[in-house]
Each structure stands twice: as structure tokens, then as C-alpha cells.
Image (cartoon, rainbow, N blue to C red; front, side, top):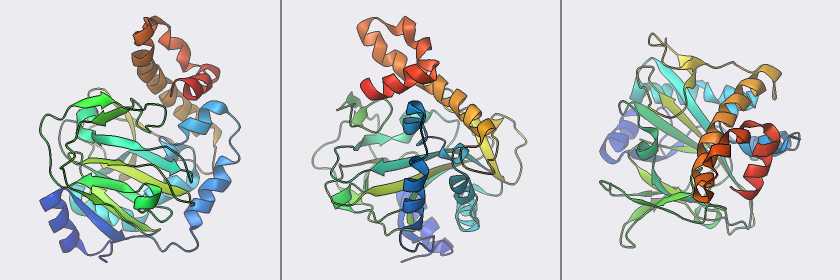
Length: 295
């Protein structure tokens, strides 16, 4: 298997196909980060945070923020994006054993609406990831003008519950990874994942790295500087936690999540002609109810 330092192989695959896997990255022993995550979420009491910790997770958990800045990961990203790098988002995809949660087929570019293509996702397996437990899968061929439907929104881990309409004849790769390995892919890749039918939990951590000049019309307006400099100032600077659940970081994170919940909640409430009440979703208590009953 290639390691994070096998630059030529990784770049050739990434530039040709838009993705590369598996890449040896972390020296994982006994699923260290999986157990770290399980221990971390046991400490969460607030209902809204039980769901929202999975997004912009580097603001909630110090260990995720540390991983986001890991020298091996950063050296890999530099080969693609250059010296000036921001982390735009971090997402934890957790599928407990024997559950129906899945990620619908989708292309990130559809919803990100970025200025350019200078962004890369580093998707790290924090436990073994295989077809039985719902590993990532990537279409081998790109599709122009992709169309979507809403599919099983309660179990679809995508915020909007969307799924791209894909022909049954399309070929795809199962992104099989051992704990500590990663896959990289660009925003044009169509990908998703199936339910976890195994007897083991599955945990994946995705980082979205971006260049400071790459602006967005409607998505996250904050980011963390990883290396180099940001001479553009398009993104609000994020705080760096010195410990898990640091108060100022949670406050910053909560404000981001409340705005996102109001946006996504409005589209759901409009089906019942209740879009005008979406601002109330910004409160912690209402968000907890929203995630429980509407997501």
C-alpha cells in the first residue's frame, strides 16, 4: 500500500481519477481514536450537541483539532493545494453496528458552490471500513448535470436527505480501509455509503482542506488556518481548543450549528407552510427536538 509520502503515485491517481486509496497514514493501534471518540461522546449531556458534535468536530474535541494539523496529513495536502491551507470543515461519520444509517449518493460540488476546485477531502478510517459495515463507495465515472431525490431522510446522514439518481449499471469502488488508512478525493467525485450490517461500529473522520482564495456562496464562512498564511480574509478565524469541550470553542461552534439548523430546518418546515418559524430552531432546546423528530 502507498504511504502518505508516496507523492508520485498519489498525485497520479488523484489527477487521473479524482481519488486515491488506500493510503497508509496513521500508526493506529487497537483502534485508539475509535475508543477516544466513544469516551468523548459519553461526556456530552446537551441533546443538540449529541448530534452537532459530528460537524466542525475540531471545535469540540482537541484530539480532532490535533489530528487536523498532523504533519503527515498536512504534508499530503500540501502536494495538492500548496503551502497556504485552511481546514474548512471536519465531519465524523459514525455508524453503530446493525443500524440503518447511510450516506446517499452525492457530489460535494453541487452544494458547496465554491469559486474553484482547490479543495481536497482526506477521509480517515478510525476503525476498519469495509462493505459489511458501510464503507465509503465512489463512482468510477463522473456524471454531468446530476439530479437528486430525497431518500429516507431519517436515516440518510446527509443534512438535506438527498441522494443522486444513479443508474444501476454504474461501476463503483468500495473504499476499503484499515484503521489508520485514508482515502483522498476531490469535490467532483460522486460518493456515498451503505448501512452498517456488521457486528462492529464503523467510524470515519473527514477533513475538508481548502485554499484561502476559494470562496463559497452559501456554505461555512469560518475556517482554521493550518499552514502558510491567509491573505484574503474570506473566512472567519476559528478558535483552537486546548481541551475537549472548551467553553469559547463550544460557543463559537453552537452559533455555527444554530445557523445551519435554521437553514436546513426551513426547507423541511416549508413543506408544511411553516418556514416562517424556522428561526426558533436556533435555540439549543428546539434543535435537540428538531434532530430527534425531523432529522
